[in-house]
Image 1 (spheres, rainbow, N blue to C red):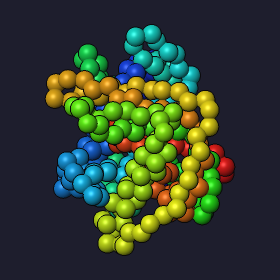
Image 2 (tube, one colour):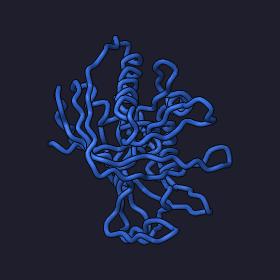
Image 3 (cartoon, one colour):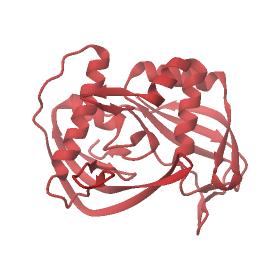
Image 4 (cartoon, rainbow, N blue to C red):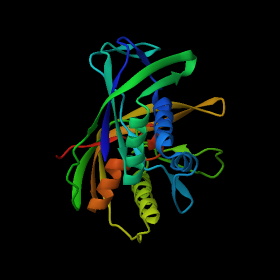
Length: 259
């Protein structure tokens, strides 16, 4: 399910370009208000399949209108309201998040450079669910989807874009493994799937910076439209859990285009 969180704050706030890590921390904090054990498990481990861990939630861009782009700073929201769409594949995590929001409707986002933004949750909207069906559907990746793979002789995973010969396979494999991790959590059997995808031009890259161990990590993702031919349950996992890696930090948010 997807929720739209409507927030109130001072008009004229400036949100830095790399705000995503603060949203992720807010989601964990909100979950811990209702279920600390769940929040800790999700933060530390997530849901696993064959040694890989998936958080199975994602969020879209922080939006407000009108706004100004401030070079080297971020977005200035002229309005005193803004919104963030948050998506959860698993119902029990969604329930805990909503419960946590009602328990504490105020929060202060802290960003690098000593910037702080206090907000109050004004409203929560349940967004309508699109129709998922077997076959082909078209999607737009709104925030860059990250796909990476370990390579011999490299200390860190290497980012791959749609021009890479194995990109479609890596993209679909990540999606299927996410889905299988949710099935294992629910105690349901996994299975094999026949899935195809086609990437449409143009393709644009996007960098996301997140703090880690007193350093900053820059992660590269790609934005594009694409067609996915898959069973309905795979479409649902894509829509709610996101495309690619690091969706819990705001990467890989997708919108369904053929509604």
